[in-house]
Length: 51
Image (tube, rainbow, N blue to C red):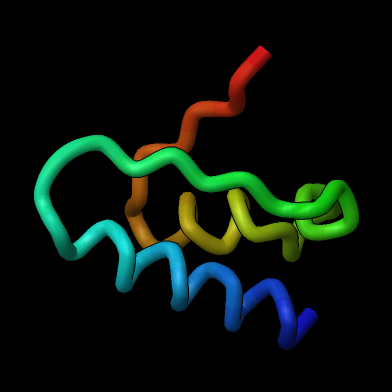
């Protein structure tokens, strides 16, 4: 989904700074193989979901 790719781009931009980054997104961006976290993982970003 193009919108999830855009969100992943925004997350990577935020991560260019120093420190820890906490990101919250709507549930629809977290579902499926083309979800934000899967796009980021494919780009080599370490992703951890909060319980």
